Length: 399
Image (cartoon, rainbow, N blue to C red; front, side, top):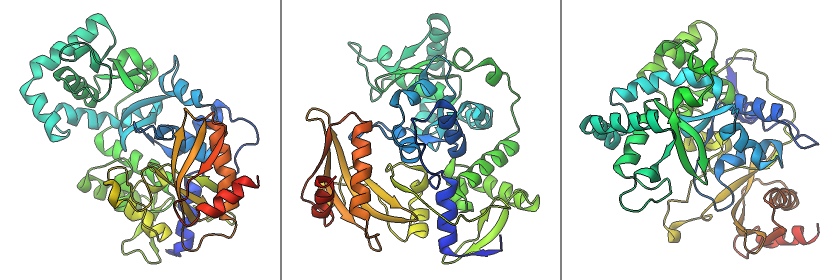
């Protein structure tokens, strides 16, 4: 790999690193394939929005196709999980072996380095937090609803003082998610949930953990600036700069210039640019490939904005918008909703992107059909909004 690469090479490296350049399995993927994928990604962001399906189910669909939904649930919250929950890139599902790499963050949380409101609660109500921890030690798993003011209320949104205490303990690594009921976390002591081989594993120094996390991010991103690498696991600024410099000096990372990028980028030496990119897939709004909006614009020349939190009258593409990737190009965006009562996947808007391939409508129709079947829906229905909607509706009718 030369010290300078083109924008196209960078795009291909990024897509390949994310597991989107490999053909989907012809049969239903097994657990081993699923685990390899999550190890490759390093994290899957958890999100509660259930307009189509909760977002943490979508990255595996984008890469593996119609895998069993309960596979993720078993791997995350089953009797012998391979994943655990923690703050990786936001709330995330992470490979179990990575737990020691986040102990520095847990230790910092105990010292008050969490978001400001929770840190203040930790300082002011530590006796109460200790009492909650003692209750879990004594009585076993609890939920936020167990601490609701008044009648018990289930739900992750229930931020009573008990829920705040649980979240502080979760940040601190003293408790973790044992399972979920619906979307509500059930917490228990970390040593009672995680395998002994994990909890007894040596704790790396903070610098060692940072270097390891940056290398996981580098492999998962293909090519990335220092800011991109830092964002993948939300690393500290100064420490990231120092650790990246060490990795370059050790020749574990190589520095490259990318056409059109103002900052130098980094990749794993020996990384090769693929000749073919067979990707044809819908991406979650929270997909790893497009986590960092600035990087997405650098890679694809298009602004991908999360519009869930945008007032309805200001939305450009819709509420829950999934970009559609063909090869190395984002060719379309679709605003989707799983109408479970009617049994259909609704395309509430479909927009064609500049430079889209001629086969975009047909390819998108095929992918939407697969997604509908994966979600247990009978078909796909297209509303009239968006310039791609008429052609997409015709392509679906001709299937």
